[in-house]
Length: 463
Image (spheres, rainbow, N blue to C red):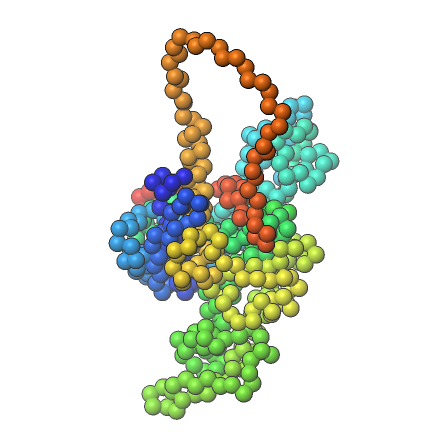
């Protein structure tokens, strides 16, 4: 695929503290060339939910303006949007289907019927099923089957992971984007987008935990044996840490945020007990001395609470360090805290590292995109290219090739003698120490629902 054929995909991350817009296009090597990047302070969004549509719309407009400013030739009409928030929930269900003819191999239509039956599961009023994800199948007495198509059996069943969200909360996001004169290509769960950007295929098979620490929430996704086993939204994030600093040290919100970013540490033992930070006083009041040790103790207490909730979610699905060889990947803005890796490994017992989306980017990207803050946005662009590749493949499969008119037959050439020794084809192998990038088609194939299709009704067409 060359640059002429490759479209421009735009990801829009609506967060509690920031709104980011990134436009990218694939180059000849399959890497993302960043064509535009803009961000703005978020407004009208709390804990990942759009509460004030007008304020959110203005913040989106500012981010788009900054993105176009970085590349005046850029025209943005369609976006892939991330969705998160307290309203996102998950549950486990079990479904079975008794087959009409056990002698015939299981067909794709039967599996689709089994999945669609789970969409009738009872959920609280006002919620909507976002994703129905099959985890493992069972055919008669045979368990842990990943792909049942082609098997024989009387009954086929599966364990399912169902993700739900509040319909009005999702609708508010779409309304804010519609009023920004943008077309929503799809709404994508932020933990899945972040996972696609920072996780390798080896991580997915080995078992890994993705922890995206955002401003209002921390999103969790747990993969084991190539399957999404569990998702959760932890109702604490970077803003909670900022609030704790503000209340604990008696400073302004802007000062608390600056203290966290510039001097914050997740381990109080690593902070110098004799070091102090001087901040200016208010309206002629004397300057204030802030202890680095006290600052770190406040941050550590909140981070321990978040990590303890991660451990609780792991226990819910019966997984620990012995089964999650890939460890824990931390991404999002909160991943930049000093000494967070050490605290995470101590608190969870899992190997930990910072998740960066750099391996997907061409060398010309903006320096700020090196930060884990933009993992979700890069993942949204990757989702867009996966959708594009699927459309291209469908087009190629349905295109009828014109048959070349047959002329008079040429005399048959004598057959060449068989070649005994042939040179085997060269198979490209990953470099030593490099993880194989995740196959995005396999990754997104597990999540087939399009959230945007939920709103394809007459009521929303009138908005």
